[in-house]
Length: 248
Image (cartoon, rainbow, N blue to C red):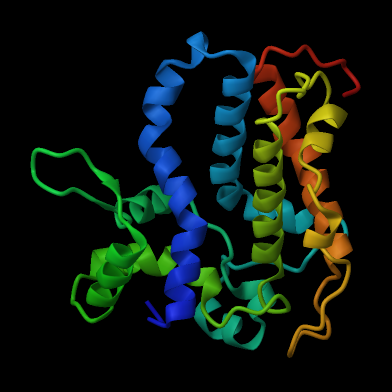
């Protein structure tokens, strides 16, 4: 755990709270999955895809234009200080994701079920762990926040793509509330569902401090939509019962 700044703690909670809440409910949702209508199944599948993006950092980095990204190398601690964009780990394994989720949970009493901490509870918990000697919990939260430490888009381009993928799928999730929504029948349908609700939310250029070489936002969005179309849509649609054509 490298920082206890309000900006980092609040951002970490905002990014993780929806995923933690879904993780709490995921087992019961998937157990009842067969009884859901197609819209509810689609919502569950999109949320599961949002959670799983963290494990696809290497795949996302390879999408053209490819990003130089090789965090699993000898002497990575030293190398990431000199070239953070390439050597700073910007994803999270399944196991470490599950460990991090537990650090966002609490219960009011021994008899009560686990629940997501409120923002104030999490801030207090984070600061207590920051000053504690609990190495396991510190590592779990530290890894969850790893890509946020000293974050700039230039230095964390893979993580920025990961967040953009998630944001676009959240936009798709919002569209599922529309009564006029048609069931997606193709990869193009699903990619269209995940396009920005408002293009101004993803401007094509920024004036990033210390980030003159950062990837343009239009390129990041294009890479994110390509990932959604190639890696997310086929699996999701098949689970939704859609038969894709051989060339889809």
